[in-house]
Every structure is written in C-alpha cells, then in structure tokens.
Length: 147
Image (tube, rainbow, N blue to C red; front, side):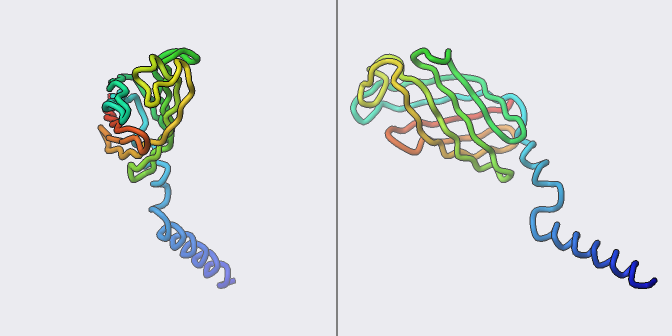
C-alpha cells in the first residue's frame, strides 16, 4: 500500500513542475482578461507620401477576453473602419485595421470612395492606456485609453 501515496505525491510534483514551466498556473487567462473593458481610440494619420490629406478618427473599442474590437462609421459606407486583434498577456498586440475609403483626397493613391483597404498595426497596451502604429504606406498613430 505505500506505493499509492508515493504515486499521488509524484503526480502532484509533476503537475507543479508543469505549472512552473509555463506562466504560473491560471495566470495566463487572468492576464489576458486584465485589458477587458471599454476603450476609446484616437487614430491620427499624417499627410500621405502623395499628398493625401491628414485626418483623425475617434471611436470606441471593447476588449473581451483579451480580444479588441473597435468600429467607426456605418458598415458598407465610405469612411467605415474596424480594428481587431488579440492583446497578449504582456500587452503586445498586432491588430488588423480594415475599412472603406471616403473622399479620394484622404486616401493614398486617391482611391475611389468605398474602396476596401486593410493594414496591420503594431501596438502595446498597459493597464489604462496604449499606443500603436500602422506598419505600412503612411504614418498613422493610435492612442488607446481605457474608460
């Protein structure tokens, strides 16, 4: 009979060792959820390399289970924009911005209104704020503030 307590102890040690090898047990899910809540987003794009006008958008976003979703405007209409992506427990994030162009003067290449576009945003979040930058075409900066 002494083999049973030894087996239980060995199993407990193995489980403890597995937890130490990753993040502390149970904290990964908690850390991802620490960004959850309502956020305000300010997107500012500088003048484009071809003279496309600068602009600033303000829109709300929500983070649920560490996943951000923000949206501006009406889906299917010019100027509509969404921002989506996962925020890692350390606050790093690669977000995807997608939308439809509005007036040609504001888009690089002076595209027709409602032309679809997509780009990535490299971002980092803290407990109450964050920043990000568009990684292609033109300089666009994001500021995130938790509400």
